Amino acid sequence: MASQRRQMMQSHQSWTDDLPLCQMCGVGTAPNCTYGPDGKDTQSHPNEDGHFRFRGEEGCFLYGVFNGFDGSRVSSFVSQCLTAELLLGQLKSTHTDSDVRRILSQAFDVVEKSYFETIGDALAEKATIISQLPEGVLFHQLSPQSQKLSERLKDLEQEVSGGATAVVALIHNNKLYIANVGTNRALLCKSTSDGQNQVIQIGRPHTTENEDELQRLAGLGLDVSGLRQAALIAGQSSTRRIGDYRVKYNYTDIDLLSAAKNKPIIAEPEIQASQSLEGVTGFLLLMSEGLIKALESAHGPEQANQEMVAMVAAELAQQGSLEAVAQSVVERVKRLHHDVYASGRQRASHCSRHEDMTLLIRTLNYTLCQCPTPTAPAMNSVSPLGGRIYPVSVPYSNCPSSTSKTSVTLSLVMPSQGGTLTNGTNTASTLEEGTPTHTPGQSPTTTLHSTNNQTTQSSSSSSGDGGSLFRWVARQAVQPDKTGRVPPYVDFTQFYRLWGSDHGDFLGTQGASAGLGPQ
Picture 1 (spheres, one colour):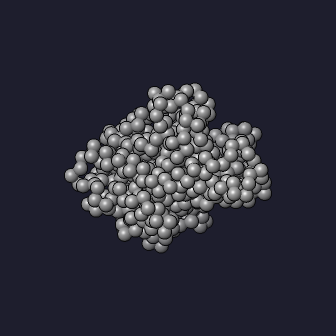
Picture 2 (tube, helix red, strand yellow; picture 1 turned 60 degrees about the horizontal axis):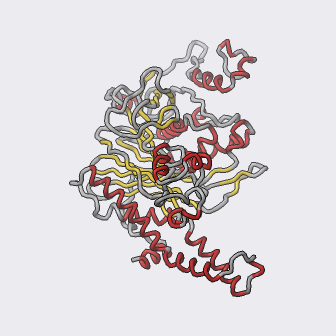
Picture 3 (cartoon, one colour; picture 1 turned 120 degrees about the horizontal axis):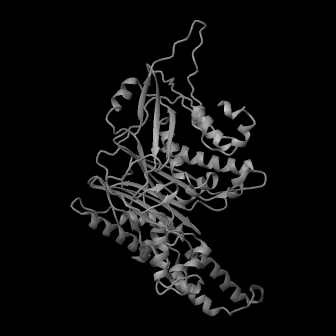
């Protein structure tokens, strides 16, 4: 079986080549880059991220985003094999929640063991070569034969090194399950009965900032204060990862981990409680660590979830393809990150480079825009002072098929309890029905205004049911006055408010008290 898996990886084949792709999903990607002194970017290494998006039988769907490190070998292997462990007859419609959670957990365990089987021969050869080389001798002092062995050792090390983190979403019996290993992220945006839209971060990253993870590691005999101070373990921030044989089999040779009674770095997924998707309207986002870190580096971590959902919502309101939506959002984050670096401002030092970025969007009972997209420079423009989004309400549509001017308002609500990320702080992670919505004084509400180009008929039919992602507000066409002019229809109120909060000192000398924007 191990030889079969090795042959499969070498030939780039997959057990799941014949599985149909999910058409309700879009993926955007961007490679890593490092900015030079001249502002130009260069790619440091080949893209190491991976993803999948498959439709199984009996209404079963599987999605995943994988963040590879030290090569793409593990992320590629996991994206192939994990699907084979879940969508080739293992899941039945009769399975209960506990059955599904057990199957998910077993799949991760089987996949990691299978991966280590594929590198077993290389690890054995590596151990043999190490035993044959003299200790403490420099390369140029070795005999020609030993130099060849040393070169072979380098090749083997590259072949067996590397690992991956993973976030996987499974929709089974119309219930959502999220399995997380490491530092990727899942966000669920869904409308509520009162017309608001709830943004939920499902699960927490497995790092030394996660108190539950620190307690787990402390139970193995590790020094928690040392782990907190170090932040990185064997070069990575994740305390759970797939592969990476160094921390799985040689952890006693790593100072931070040497006191552990058992394997401290594990591939066991944290599986969140299932949530029914019956009647849910919204979208699910799976994001690689590189995408999250790029946005957080540019704007700080406090509002990263809200900003990400706002960007996705803006593109959904303007594009007719999920693939285009996902790619546009990734490109926007990439542009924001670069502009902050180029600005030379406070956060520029955090933005000298970014890792590979992957965004997977899965819509839930949501219909994409069908007619041509109007130009909306206010939504898509990037501030030359650092890239922050300053929304402007433009209640106008130039779609030829539209008979009136409409605007779309999306309110993003960050709940303050259970299973959510509130103001950038993780709380206890659960996904039970009845997650509270916004109440005054508890969590911020961000309103995004976006031009929409659907007709009045479609707008009317989608309003009033309380389940639509967008709240539609029809407005009468503005009529010209006697001089042939029309009143201003672009509302800059929120733009001035946000711009002013970021540039208070500037506005203080430019008449901010008079309610004016930037001069």
